[in-house]
Length: 206
Image (tube, rainbow, N blue to C red; front, side, top):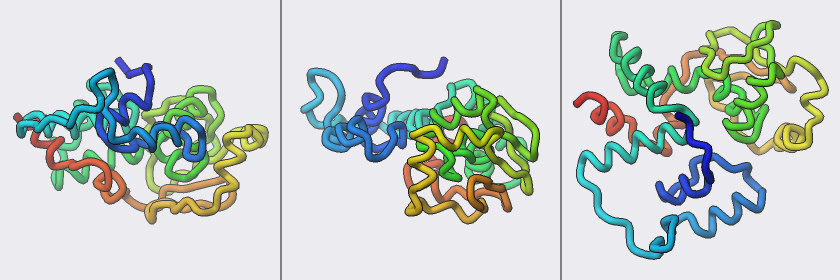
């Protein structure tokens, strides 16, 4: 089951900004002030030391929370990556990065992955000219993503993110105006800034 509780609680639990709140909002500012304080009445206590298995679990949970997926989905991506020839961690990263909701977020067409997922669920996006309402849809190289209706770009929170020119788009994506395209296989660079993928692979490999 996907987590639907307070998002700042998750970020404080992991001690890191997981990108669950829109930058610049009061909620995000509040998170940054308390990021190093554990949630709950005993949050001021120092973080306990984890065992090797505990560290692997925390990295796995962090990856789940960042992409907003269930345990079942992440485990499925791991098994798919393991079946293919190559670096399992990189292949896992590629399955996650090529999700439609993630690409919408990486293209800065939505401020968070949750808002990107909502746009997809509500039939607000086209992939190569056809409506797609499945957030886990795997985008292929060369496929273009844009808004199905120009009115979507006028939604205030979408308008704000589109006006932000300081967001850096990953090299494996190309963006022109309100349209973006996957131009090459994603790398694990962005994910590894937040999560140790090796620990995740070791967790599932036991």
